[in-house]
Image (cartoon, rainbow, N blue to C red; front, side, top):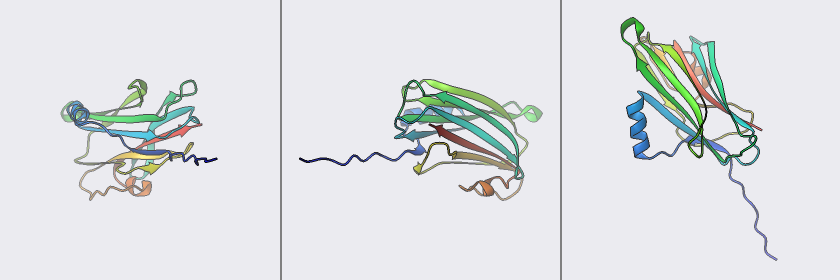
Length: 178
């Protein structure tokens, strides 16, 4: 009797595979846009969170979210996490509105929110997850960052301690729950 060993794929988070058409739509809709995708999730998921941590000169000043999608009734093997940044207003009224949320495999918005960010800086750098990373339940995964400064030299990094040193930093996190 022959038997095959079952090999389950590892859960991971990565930049979502989107078509050129979808990418172009996102570019028209927002000055910055990104979609990350958690894949190979399996039956163990009960919910997913997405939140943003806002740091100024190394200090946590706000936490936006989490927005939570409930998967206790209907399981999914793929979830997308999306955020858009839109610049609005002029002069003293200039600000950025950030929209973020969770979309399921069928394209249904499971959870979403938006926040406003002051636009008093002159430089900005954005970095998003670029290669697949393992993800586990109950452990936050950093999927992107947006750092700002006035005239300081800015460096992107995958390490939180380096990112939060800047004048202003937003760190985008996702977390899957059993």
